[in-house]
Image 1 (cartoon, rainbow, N blue to C red):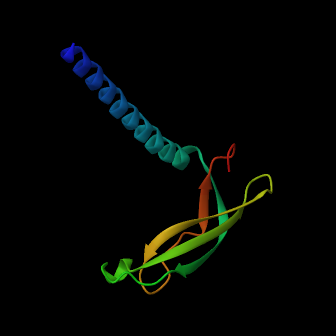
Image 2 (image 1 turned 180 degrees about the vertical axis):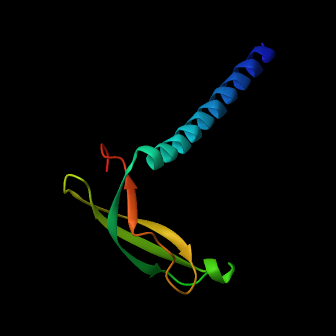
Length: 105
């Protein structure tokens, strides 16, 4: 009875780890597909520093920055968002173009 339980536990963890691996592969493939099949648009980008310094990090990664962006898609709809970035005393380097899928900007 104990060996049957171990087999079920082993099978569960194999399936769970496999599902995590498949999910990570899908994320990587979607990023690659965005590069090849996505559309680009110019964006208005602004940055602001959030919080204080983390002196335990190197100088180029000491602060957390919020990068806010706004862009218009091909149909004229306006979309905006933000993402955190690590950077130094000056604003982190950002690209003024965004990549998006036309069916899901």
